[in-house]
Image (cartoon, rainbow, N blue to C red; front, side, top):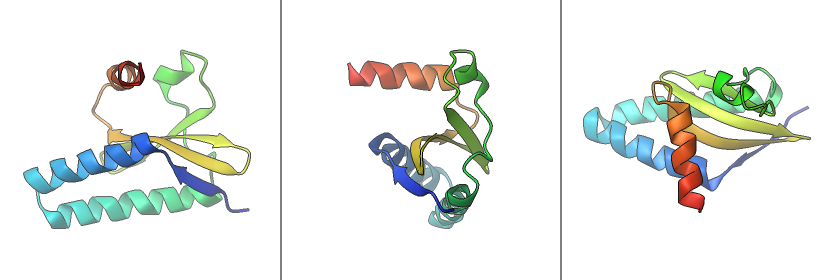
Length: 109
């Protein structure tokens, strides 16, 4: 069974920020390689949606419907609902997830 993938606006924004950072600090070629790896990981999730682990920070909050996978130095946070994967966050794995989530909540309000 292949799951449908929905890239949420927040994840699309993350990709734009990631692209700008990589192109500015490295190169367009580095961005292409990074983006290809991200797309490959997401394609794999279509077939194996539960392959990711539950992020420790979210598990402590009893938000176990969210999972994560790594793509190079990037963390992809997603949610599985029925036959659909919702990509919520694509961020550098070294970033503090708690801080990132707090900023996101403040932006919504």
